[in-house]
Every structure is written in structure tokens, then in C-alpha cells.
Length: 283
Image (cartoon, rainbow, N blue to C red; front, top):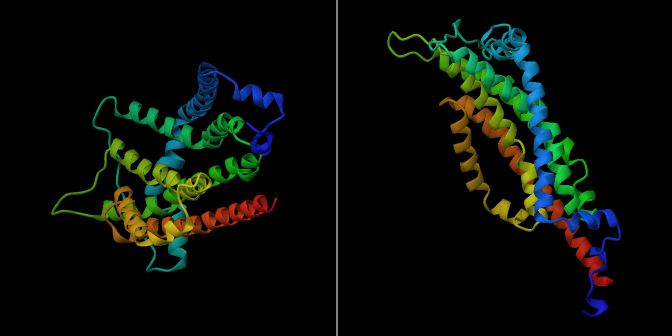
């Protein structure tokens, strides 16, 4: 190949980086294995701490949204009597012998994943980063912090906003002479559904950024399919929330705002790429 056809920008003179690029498939698997092991260990360590702190975790975190003293209820009630809402008093019941222990394990693992998410994503990024060029690493600077903030923001939004409204609606919903007395499994499953998926959905801007960087989507595509995206967001909101229009809209609105934010992010990626292409053409 003639020298003038060689892309000098893609030549990396760093021997350490070249060594990593020349790693065999089995070497990559070995490296991936250790990243996964460290990630799982971080989740396990935090899960063990949560498991040991059983009383504090269940009283102050898991069962807190069903109490009138929960932060969200107090804030809304202080704003207006119309917005004031609290679920009726109810007892969470366990009907199976193993239900309390199994649920305790599940809560510990879920909270372990949520708390360890920044480190888990850090390990994933460290596995991916050696295969990227310096300019790509520079473009993704701060991605671990941004992803962690978005994920934890989504979890907190689900916990403090979706959960109180969902609990109030579902526990106040009566058929004939029935009374809502949820099981421990049902209660924890609902709480998990309102928080963990919401945290993952809040990663939408990052996903769009990545897709734009590899050229799979454009800002024009996102603008064209706005209406379709809105319908999809409504469907997703209906799946992860109870059949309550108020609660559904409360998750639909921030998700759609994240979609609009994604359009802005993708447009900026395209603009920078266009400038870069123009500079390379002039050179």
C-alpha cells in the first residue's frame, strides 16, 4: 500500500496500546472475566452489607413509602391540600415459609447492584476503553460519571415520585368488599419495578450518543420519529407503572424530555463530526 494511503491518525505509537490490540481472543476473554469478577464482587460485598443491615434497610428504605411520614407525602401535603396524598394503612404479609428470607436476599442483591452501579460501569468502560482511539476516549470523557448520575437519578425518581403515587392508587383501589393487604413478594416486586427499570431508562441520552457516534442514527431521524417515540414512551410507562393516568404521565414526561435531550446531543455529535470532516478535507 502506498504511504499516502495510510491513515496516519490511526497509527498508535504507544507500545502498550498496540500490545492490547494484538491480544488473542482468549486473552480478551480472560480480561473480560476479571472485569466481571470484580463487578460481581462489588455487588456481592454491598449486598452482604445490606443483608446484615436488615432492620434499617426494610424500615427506612423498603417500607418507608407506605408510611404517611415519607418525604414525598410531606412535601406534597405542604404544597397544597389537593396534592396531599397518602396510602391507607396496611400490613405487608408473608404467606410462604421461605418468602421473607427469599425476599430479603432479592432486596440485598437489587440494592447491591444499584449502589455498585458506578463501579460496575467503570469496570465495563475499562474493558472497552483500550480498544478505542485517543480521540474517541476524549469524546467520551466523563461517561462513567454521567451514566452513574443518570442511573441513580432515575432510581431516585422512581422511588420518590412513582412509588408514592403508585402505592396510593393501588392500595386505595377497592373491588366490592375486598381490602388491599399486599404480600411481601408483591410489595417488593412492585417497588423494584418502579425504580430499577426507571434508572435504566434514564440512560437514554447515553445510548443515543453512542449510536450517533457509530453513525446508526441522526438528529433528523429522531425528529422524524418524534410521534412514534412518544407512543413507545407511553407504552413503556404503562408497563412499568400501574394503570393510573397520573402516575403514567409522571414517568412519560421526564422520559420524553430525555428523548428531546437526546436529539440535542446527537445534533452536537453530528456538528462536531461535520467540522472534523471539513478540516480533514482541507488538509
